[in-house]
Length: 425
Ligand SMILES: Cc1ncc(COP(=O)(O)O)c(C=O)c1O
Image (cartoon, rainbow, N blue to C red; front, top):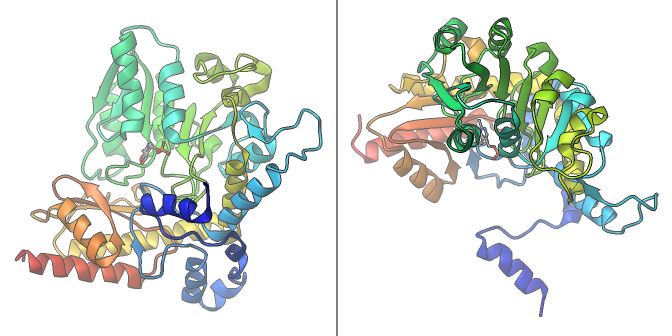
């Protein structure tokens, strides 16, 4: 028998908290538009209330997955309630994304990213979008893709699969840790290009170090050599302001569930024009995938998918626009600089670029002999502070706007306490 108890039991079994009643989601007012000018701290504190993350939790790991604020959750839940009534206007209208062109959702996101609706396909995550690129880009055995040695598994593995299965060649250049400036990265890319290089595939923002790569310059370098440029922008939407047509790249992928705090299950694939689309076969397909008049929407013909997910995406864009991307970016960066500088003062080795143009809202530091996993577990289990990093001693500290300096000071104090506890001076 299916009762409320067994339903909640499912959440408990998954280690989740009790659900917040959907009706309670819009009971906390948004900050007044002029509050930022009158009292900046109060403005950000009011926005913090829009997130369900408990007040005593400090989340320094939006880099893995974001948390959707109340208006986004409300849009998703309302979306389920309205679409499940099956009262769509037309006799052929059904609440499924995966067959139609859904401009009502693609256009706001394309606008947000400085692209047109014809260039933008909304997919289910960045991994899926990266797989479309690696799987679908026209290449012959022996042709090369050039990437950095800091790509996320979801960027690298689709190409590794293609290499194993079809004999294309994955070449890597080593990212400097940290890069001094844009030239430090561009020279390495330039040196690694060969006559067989067909495509450069790099992260816009490195998952390993948070370095913001000089996308516009990389796209221009690729173009000057007749090579396509593709960026994995999983971390970019909502962290920094992005104008895709200004970058001038051929292909760009990303996730909206991280820094834009949209629904889990939202990603995108941007293709500059029809020439590029002609060179990228689709991967998940149903009728319409090969209709060139559909432009980017032909990459969205993926079969039944979830419309309330897209409703949440629109709400997330509205939420970010309400605050303003300039304001979000400035706050994100200020907090990252704050935590970075405080860690360097404590003797940490910085893997964050000294060049402000190559910095975003992820500060990465190396702190030997501290063991990152030991610190990470201790912080979360005992103190409700969430960080992430890499073996053995790298800490990746992501600073979304809803954090405060007091949150960061709490982390810093605990970091000092951990070192004292371990006898590390
Ligand atoms: C650079 C990069 N690419 C791709 C991904 C995968 O994103 P998703 O889980 O949305 O597919 C991540 C996730 O952390 C990432 O950091």
